[in-house]
Length: 306
Image 1 (cartoon, helix red, strand yellow):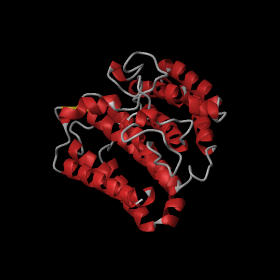
Image 2 (cartoon, helix red, strand yellow):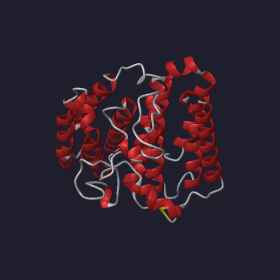
Image 3 (cartoon, helix red, strand yellow):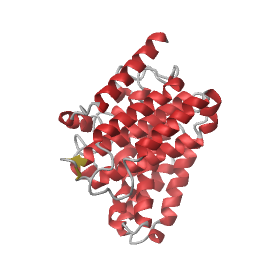
Image 4 (tube, helix red, strand yellow):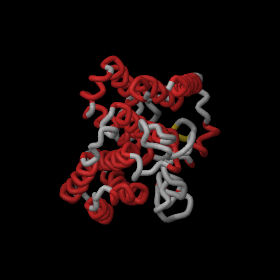
């Protein structure tokens, strides 16, 4: 355990050092993009049906960088699911935490859709209604089937199929609510002791925020947002992380109240990168600082991880 803690703190320290110094590696953006969540069940070669054919969250390799927190037995003995960075082997069947993180990412997409459509940005919101089905379902499907949550498939497919005809919120409210309830039911059905532990809750939050940061980075080119949908995905994921963290505050406070307060503060700082549903003309937070904020959140949650 001592070695694991040293490894974690060393990794966090290096991440913070790199991010704070501004060496966030625009030259590594392609690698970050390739490391995003991918699913072997989706069609379309490298990327499946995803953001503009560029990469997104669907493809060949299985769960990607955002799920590295669940690799190599990182859930208190659940694992044996991958080596260092071997998150492609993370299984939504074997790992309750990875499974919940995938469902929460689906909800993050839906949060983005709801906010945009209700704000009158209907054209921007429609694609986000399809993303849980098109980008994520193939990856999470084995986990849903193994837990008997078969209602999710029908609800998400219907939502995706009707997205193109949406002109106002009332056009999709019924289908949206049905899909949301199905996802909530699937999340709530995971009631194992390990799934409800502070460590697993923290890993779910970190998976969501890590993916949000990757999306933020990918949305930028030469200091401007050129992929608006990816910025919006990131906003949805970090909002989902906030809701999940808040809903488990009793568990985290009971184990370490100070760490809980630090995590809330760190997440507050991270969320400043997404000040609105539509991206600002200039980034509210430089990408280097966003990576640094993610590292600080990981540092704040470290007491729960081991």
